[in-house]
Image (cartoon, rainbow, N blue to C red):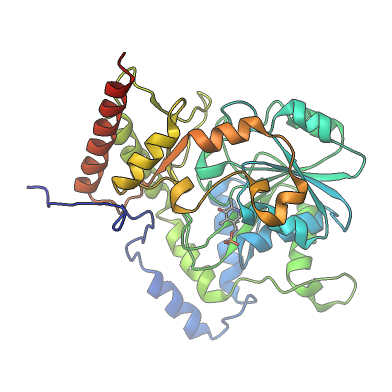
Length: 377
Ligand SMILES: *Cc1c(COP(=O)(O)O)cnc(C)c1O
């Protein structure tokens, strides 16, 4: 017997995942017993080593948010007032805000058609002698493969920062997102796959960059040689992250299985399809993302009424320059506009009971069938 679950605009399918207890309290108790709760607690080093090990990066630096991770990385790459930073039009506010925090100028570029990757033609059109960094964004945990734009940026000496805040465990050409370019920035906010409440970390294979980030985020280690801020992650939060990291692989498996179950419900030859990615890529299914080329708006409305509001409805997601604070940096980005308009995000987190997944699959089938009916001449 499946329980009678009903979802609607008032009671949408919950897109927030609360992981079950996995021994976090034991880990926190250890930190409390030690007594050092600050970002100087011994657990921080253990957490950073565990993160570097899990992702296969040379270094991990833990900080107090994904926003801090992005800001500290930009600063450590020498981005200063008046410098330019390339950012895709698909970026949500938290990706681009740290550019403004540096006093730098966001240069918004389009994405490649039907892709989250930076559009190489737009990148080369907008590169200048003041371009100091470029941010790439595997949004919704979907691979952003920048194989086309990366050589252009490398030739110009511009480092790429991966905003992997939604992409823990996403693989691009067989490698984890956040370990492919100069530095990867992650958030461990409650909504992310690894959740510590607030928090974040940076991964890099560049030891010198890791040292600069470490010094910047820890007040220059109070030596007085360099400018620094206090972006340290508190000990008890590192303890939560350390314990939850053990379950990340299982969470990824569960999300992939849930996504596969919903994808198998998509009618053959219908207009709904999964957002595309390369054969050697794997999304982490932060969300399952479907596209409806010709009719996303009517689907978005139908999904919302069925209790499955896509991000465009739930959060008003739209390309960056539609937000007033980024409007002065607006340029024509038709591909990002089309992508934002054509995508539907659906939660597939492990907290969704089987009955909810079946219900969602049923809604997808019904909405596709009624769409096909309307299309009939
Ligand atoms: C969550 C998020 C951030 C910011 O992380 P915080 O920890 O909330 O500061 C940045 N970029 C993206 C894509 C995010 O999803």
